Image (tube, rainbow, N blue to C red; front, side, top):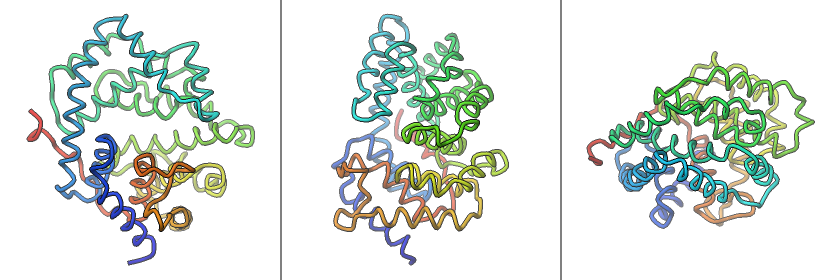
Length: 320
């Protein structure tokens, strides 16, 4: 076992020992990703537990979408969840304070419904929500430059969900806007938080195309992203963080692009970030296990490697 796999095993061991002390969302996030690269059925139960809560949320979201007043109230609640702890958050809050708060709510709803579809959970409420969203004019959110700059990654998730759920396809228009905003600009002109938004968004074009680790992705389709990562990997490592750097590595793996030099740099960085006393990679200065879960499951996937992808899991047998 090479040194990177050893670190991966230590991360996995730490989280599996403490998995049921974490929030349901973290349990599911961790378990779903390991399932999708291993196919091991023992990871299904934490996912089932989380989806039982999502069912309740979807029932509530349907009631919200049926009333404009409730949409405004719930959108404001989502807006208030944006923290005031960083430049990125403050910029996002500034933009949403003046327009389009409702996309915060719609993006959340789309994420839940999309997730249910991936797990073969068929509910009447979900179909009703899709019907309601089909009647809404949504394009303005995906062609707004300010929104793309501050909320780009979430919009990528949402725009792919809209297509997957057969609501509407804005992917081409959105991609064109994204390229004009971020790819036609000198990176030196971007503040670090803007640069991080750019790279994080680029990784998500590929991650979402894979339906979050359920299928391999066309290298040719995303050459424009992979080429950028290849040419700028040193800057990416210097200006971003473990989360983003690990996802860059995953992009090459999902596209089955044999860039060993890039992956070695990514793995080396992640291995150095590993804290042997904690047994995982802390997320910046915040060392809590739950807060660091996203970073560590992504790092685990890169350090361990991916040989095969598994769809699902199919939860139709567990959730009626």
